[in-house]
Length: 391
Image (cartoon, helix red, strand yellow):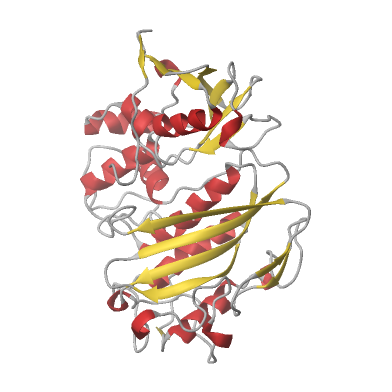
């Protein structure tokens, strides 16, 4: 990102051509270029036509999509475009991993006001020439869909000019490389309001794990600490400005809080740039999902799909030392962060057999949602977490 070259975007087709050149991965040994990789379906056509073409093999195809809307999922007063791009890919990958799948291909949609397009683009100039039909594979760009010609005449030049798209692409590309996923199409369009971005991820699985398989007597497991992301968000709001976690190795001098960088950095990173991992081990879950909206609400969703209840123990909720220390400074309850915080992107699953390497927090019951607190007092599990159109 330090050797960015000025790039002039002269309309939608030039932008699409840049995307096609930048994100076609056949030369890097990733899926694409008509080469089947690791038993995955063969990619026949990628960016540059009206739709992407895959030739399926013998695996189940997983499809997921997530949108991120400015003012709802992110606030540019607290995040960088790089972080938004990286996180968009990660949250979609998490959904595929949560079904025991392998992510492979992604479609990307960007809606951004014309005046916020400008900024430096890493990786050099867009070579001349239009994308055939003005189409990004996978569909919605076909026929020239940048509404109102929003990109036309918008020069992309100079770093720090306040542009969104260039740095957003940097974050997307970084995450795609991390997860070995190829961008094969999408849509770019102007927005009359704020920024919204969305991704559709295509993955493959031998035996998908659903939310609906939990059985009475199963242990309830999570794969890691809970509440770090929510605590990181509270820290970010206290800092009250973006933190370039993607480029920062030491505490910025402008952060004046009585916490060490060793405490703050993992919490900020967990919120701004989560890196998700595929569930590992030789265990076979009966039901599984990722924790995106909060343990409590997501556990209720899993149990509802399975027609069962749950009992959760406060003393078993995993909480990091960094979160505990930061929460004490912020005056936050660590149990509430763990139950309600959301965006942990750990995996919540049930198993009939003990599972090593993961953390058992309770058990599946016939009905109801019971919470056993640290004093061994029984009550109802709080119904909390993020739900659109309610929160």
